[in-house]
Length: 209
Image (cartoon, rainbow, N blue to C red; front, side, top):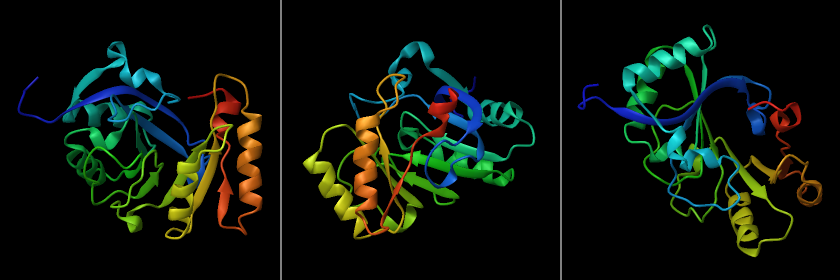
């Protein structure tokens, strides 16, 4: 492999439907990047820290893998780990757009610069993001646990004053439906006067990635 070409650390590449938020039910080829600047103890994708799942692909190899994963499917979703932490992410997005792909990204908002020509950005804040360009987020998603988190409550209020599309999603722990967290989300959604929405991760129910 030419060491001068952009490379990408990939944890997984697969086809599924988006199970949450505004793109729920829409089919995508998912690119799960390896690595993340954050260390959330409840992260639902721990493989992105396991070296055994780290594959290094060149730009050409990455494009080839995406185009041959599910021929004819032009929806690409960049996730992680944390895609913003991937060097040369803008180069990959530009190349995908040149090839007629519709490119979405799910991000915590930390790790690097946001590529200019993404079609959809799901922002899932795990830390305060006062400098994040609000207009770049297509939707905001908060993952709630069983117990109230005062700091997270402040973030939710901050974003509610700045953005119109905010989802609350219960945090799964293991294979069982997180009923306590789900009802916590539901109560907040019902009390929000229509300002909040409920996301339940349909892919978890279906047992698919």
